Length: 217
Image (tube, rainbow, N blue to C red; front, side, top):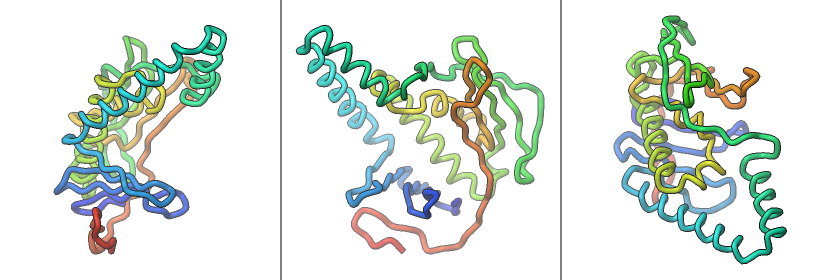
């Protein structure tokens, strides 16, 4: 849900999963179970990256204590857990090329681009200026934060990022191009493997949610 100063992210069941606020430029992630929200912003990106990097190094060190046979089995299990068995690890989107095509999604005009990784086309997207989307400044701010956090984590903890995060999807959120109204990543056969698409825009006037020890309205 897009508000003037915030973006609210809900699960299919209607549970609040995330809250981005322009003023603090912070994304709060709420766990499914009871527990403190995770705060993500540029100020704590380095600390988070260091923490994840340390976890990966500790995991790698623990593998070195195993026999070669046990180490192979453990690595296979991790690959199945983080990359999902049968999927191949993918690289980041490193360039975009304007296709010259234009589209309109929910009445908003956008420009089409092809997405490339190491010279190979891996997907497509249609970007619109932030001011063309109702309350687009808040959404643009959240996507720019996600993109920058991904870059920081990729640089500091690449092993962790390649295991856990949807690499191509996050690296293709090019803030300089605006807001992706649709974005699709495909495999070698052209089959979509991950996607982002705005399917509904809801304008609401509600009292903003406040976090960090304050009651949510």
